[in-house]
Image 1 (cartoon, one colour):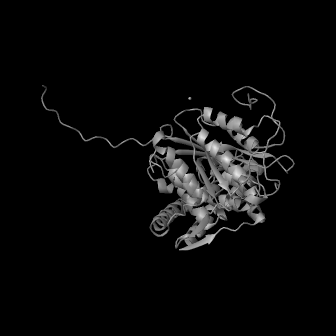
Image 2 (cartoon, one colour; image 1 turned 90 degrees about the vertical axis):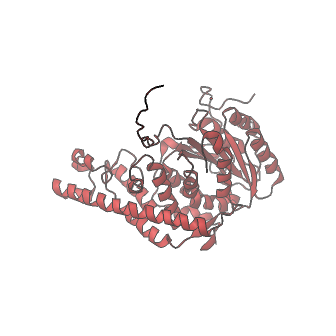
Image 3 (tube, helix red, strand yellow; image 1 turned 135 degrees about the vertical axis):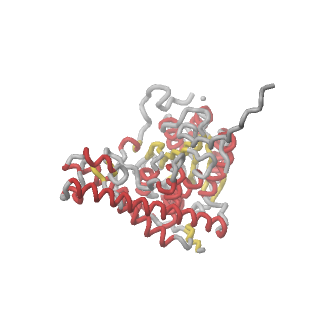
Length: 415
């Protein structure tokens, strides 16, 4: 086992591979939003018979998607210059956090969202990414964030928190666990706008959103505000080092997992408009180059969540979900017959109909074998880790799991 502490370079975002946009899930804001309906917008401050033969009971039916517990998880992150260490660690650990949460019993449906905030006068005040079950899309956006700006201590925490509470599509059902993690090292700035920090803390409580606060560093004023938010919403307050304390974990399975993960990413054939094909190839390339820990945790997360109710969960696809109207033909070979020639990828366009069908079938079979191998390796890695690695308690990812576990029983979950 090797533990390697994450570095804190400001150039971490340069690891991002092909960039693609999610316009419906992304927004930048530098001024207070206009008034709208109260359910969507940010309001100004102011959910005896003869014995009978006994037949053996049938096996329990698979848990349906609708019956699974739901978790909405939102990170509100300070992305000013002093937060580079934690931001880089979060990029590496996002799949690990999701994988650990998905291990709840019964398997929950997990959506994750993100609001990045800085302050007025910086490149942006907020960047907002909608709650989604598609972790690959969220990861793409997270990788593009870097830590910059700030420098004058107070940041516009109120707007970051307020947009997370009022503008993301939180599940309104009371049974859904709604958790928000506010992470930063500076107190809220006082602005004459609709984003008063305490107002939005109270609004979070009204919407049954639990705010768990993580202060990085040792600023006393930040501690006061963070403790207020946690207490008001029945959340938890913790203080961590400036870097977030996250570490990478190396295991004997990492090299093989990396190879299998890269091979899996190559066993995709996207059909659709040219722009959609390019976007999806970029997503596959991003997956192919994941660090070993992230690749393993991503596979584990997808096998767990996509495999619910499936006869062979290890064989379920761990490929990114096709977006932009594209179709992954190795996942849906039956769609090949209806695809127009000009929407086929170049490698299929030059083949005749029978050759195309044979090629897609071959890739699908190769991917199935790789999926089962990846699932086996990821499970073995998880077992090895549980026996050989002591979890680092003073780290951001451990903090998130404590927050989830604290509310699990109330929402029908056990860990």
